[in-house]
Length: 167
Image 1 (cartoon, helix red, strand yellow):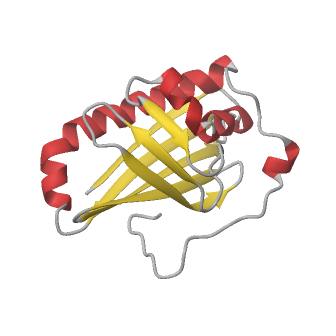
Image 2 (cartoon, one colour):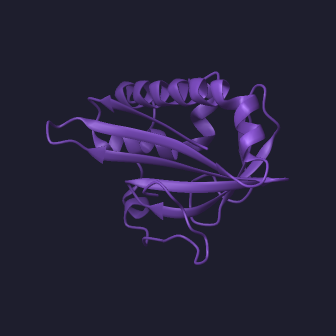
């Protein structure tokens, strides 16, 4: 099952990325997140893990498997019968605006059942999160990443993990 949401903001890509990369701050901006606790580092670096609590969902641990500093990150979590992947991207638009895109893909033997039970909530949460990221980016509520963060090496997906839908 695939779900995606995108929103256009007048914020710069730097400001949008600062909001996207401030994963521990998300619960302050959106009711779709109760808690985001870093288990390794407070930023989405390749291999870093975060424990996330969301209303109506079990607590999960997400691991970052892909990072394009200043542009995108993707992470994954596992539950019995379901492997979930999610991405967060910022892209400059020709008119000077920035597109924030987020999405989730669920795979596995029980993905159809999870989708049946949670599709409406998942779509609603993605809309809430995109709107919250836009608002945070436009308000300047998040500091821009330091120059060393932006210069971090580009990481790619783990070998043997294949995504669909242009991930």
